[in-house]
Image (cartoon, rainbow, N blue to C red; front, side):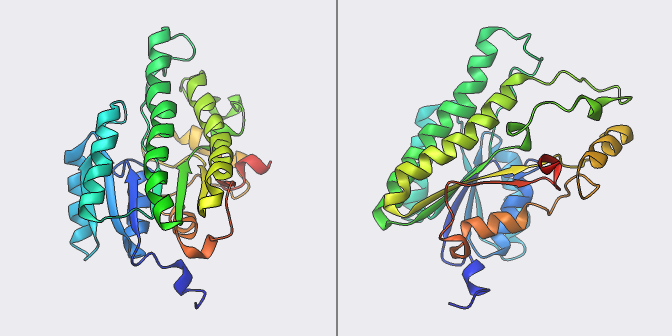
Length: 262
């Protein structure tokens, strides 16, 4: 196979949880542009339908489906619907998260439990269900969307003179750090079925609403001198989803402008 052809996702069926958020939108676009039959799924079906319609206008195959990661029955129903429509799954991208227990560590136990239920327990369940389907073809790629915050502590200097809360919740760091080691575990368990499991840990994404001082502080902390933009994840996603990375598994790849390398 020509090396450029190995990056193509034509003929592959991909499920991306989320798809309308700040990372999900560019991941979805990358998959669609690379030729994948792409399913995006979350609770907010209206928002997903809007972005899916936008991609279909360009001739891309993108379908929005309902998914509530907090409900095990919803995960099973999503699996059944994709199997009914496509009969297979080649790539699973675990991107959707819930934003619970965001008030530092001053949260009731129930708030932490809710976050872990969706961001950890549901991650295990959806990965298992679709990995079982991949085993039938002895092939597949699972990509977990982590965060560079799962690799480091809090850089308090990023918040100096910004007016922002400098007390982020420990649950996000805990979950994203755990996702990296879950990736290694799942790669070990599924490798014999030729299913690859990798993690991508993005850095901070620039949005216009961020205080200019925070953008400067954060950018100075990176090696490339800037925050991530709305295309920076596209290449790594296509690479890990495609046959171009067929001997790569169990890895965590920071896409953070060199933030964690300092």
